[in-house]
Image (cartoon, rainbow, N blue to C red; front, side):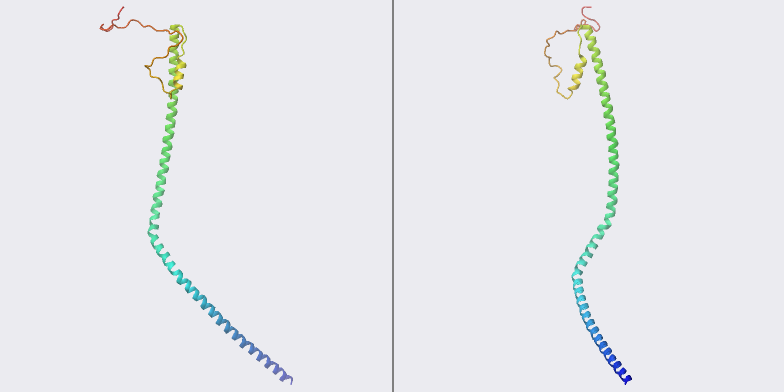
Length: 191
């Protein structure tokens, strides 16, 4: 009986194992069926999404086709822009050189003007000193020249306008006899 009991237990275990195997196969079949329905649902959703995206893709493809000629023209435009920038850089360098030359010329002209003013002031002072020695009164020609230089931007009175009389006594310079009208050249009246 010991063997039979072992056999009965073995049969029971085998029956249980077969039942578990059948149950596992049924569960596997149900899981596969659910997975298949899920896959079909995902595939349906994917097909709908593809159907909705397809017009967008075709429009994007058409836009890319339209852009191809423009893209081909971009490279020459970039090369032209680079050339224009290079030319502008050269022009700016030339302008900088010209402005530097103008600055140097302006500086030189300013120096020349200052020198001429000093020479004219010195000459006017010399003439004023000579007139002062002749008349016995000191003259201020340099001060008048400096005043004239300071008021260069101001409006000046015309040269023919009479000056206001001064309160001080004026000295007149008299010259030798003038040439008489109708007298031959070189002859003076009263010589």
